[in-house]
Length: 207
Image (cartoon, rainbow, N blue to C red; front, side):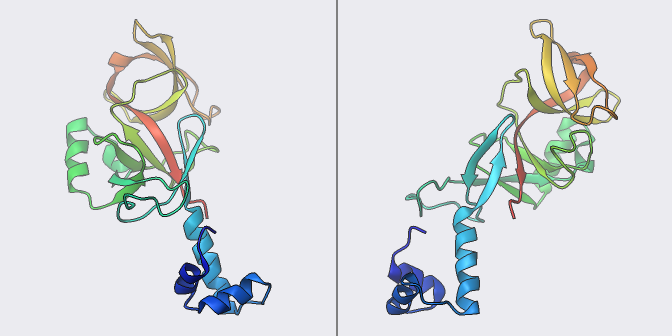
């Protein structure tokens, strides 16, 4: 941990001399041991996965990080609206209204001010992405082959799939699910959808 003896002592409620004895091998009390574990977990933060690969380690807090990062590798976060899966089965205008009214929030390091998030409640992308995990969506991101998208077909339900262009200029694409036994591939056109959004991040608790 990148803390000096005085800083560590303040976090543990101990003197600098006591911290020094711990560093030399003295056995900590159960209370001190539990406090050390909490500090270590706080410094490790949480993990965020991008569309294709695991993203950076982040520290999730209710308030923004200070101008000077508290430790090496810290990432400044912002909080975006979070709604349920049931709430996105609607036209985009209605979804945006719900996003304005919700009090739930999800931390992200995305800079897109229009980003928002939804809690997964579908098995389409299992076993990789499960119910309860959070998707952060970014209207600013361009749809590229092999990205994950959330989309609502006209007159149909919301789909959570991996997208691959068959003819990008012509707007033709193929949507596939990780759970392919239950959800076979769909060849479709962008005009088949009332709205589409790129999944920028998949967030889950690391502990």
